[in-house]
Image 1 (tube, one colour):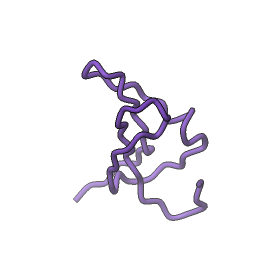
Image 2 (cartoon, one colour):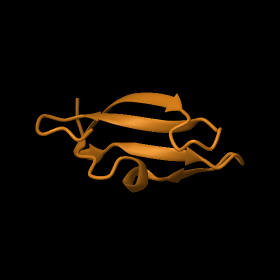
Image 3 (cartoon, rainbow, N blue to C red):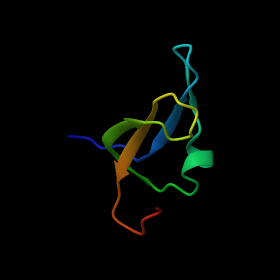
Image 4 (cartoon, rainbow, N blue to C red):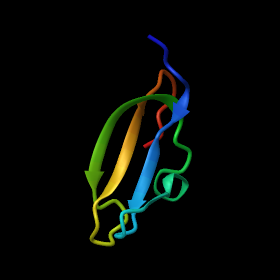
Length: 63
């Protein structure tokens, strides 16, 4: 099994079937790692569900 080093992502729902990458605005300094989980919720307070793709990483955490 191969793992690629990637960053987590936070994708904002624009309401028209498009999602914009807003990772640096919502979780600045997100570290690199392996995609490990996904969550849905209203992350930016606009009333629309957004997507967060979390990562697994050995090292310092950013919260």
